[in-house]
Image 1 (tube, one colour):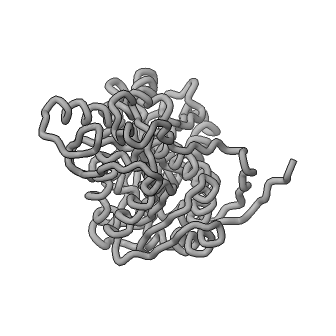
Image 2 (tube, helix red, strand yellow):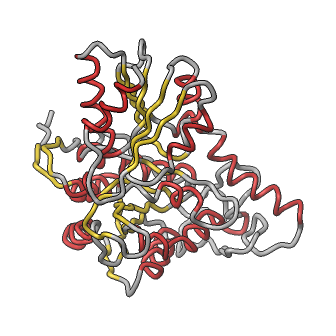
Length: 376
């Protein structure tokens, strides 16, 4: 068996490794701090693998190009940060309704507007869920380490291909720019999923075939001619004003995610079996929380950590179960209050307290430990 390679990589470089491992062969983007290293890495690596890299004129054109490439059958990626995510939202909604597989990496920085380009933030959590208008599905993954950026990027492509939907990899500047030793997976070691292909004759093909929860997607240029529109459409892809079809299609694109939440949601639980005080955190803040929980345990306080690795769909069941048996839940996040409201919604019994920081500095273990001690 071949020996796994070990490398000292930056988080954004690990994202490149994960994308290529998953079979990504198209990247379109526009430079923006703190995600630019992803574009730089893809520009060097993709052409060597027969893939295509293109720097577009702006963020809207970038995601539009990635959608077009995906429709030709290529696994496609674009990366950005907060201001660019704002520009991409219309096309994210388009990809949701047209059911185009796509991975979007958002390396979060301070905002709003141009904000603090080189400072960390976790203020795009609600934008990742609700940014595009209308009812639409949302899958967002929140890695906390360089190694996990690689594996979660692979999982993002798998989910995009499996459910024919855009998937966001959502991590903050600290995780994107930190360097850690990681182990590169061998070929075949991680599961790689490809979209279902059309098996019927071209004249029998419907891109939104209502016999399927997720219909096979034929690539443009392969003999299957079909229509793609951002308007509500029939199973052949052409627009419709039929209210029954519109309702059924909108419900289906939501339910194809809701019906598989147990498959999509992934969490890490640390010292929760006997915990009386719990911390719920993601990304770099979860790293501080992990240390704070360790220190609390050493001081005799029964603390634990729930870390959502899948941010959306939100882990309702896990948080509800946790809230039913601990007396307090602490939610540290680099914003003025976003995930804390989701925890409050799911946890009806436990007291929920937020720790919020928006000055461009990380939440420290000491801040979290102080909050834990107040609830002991």
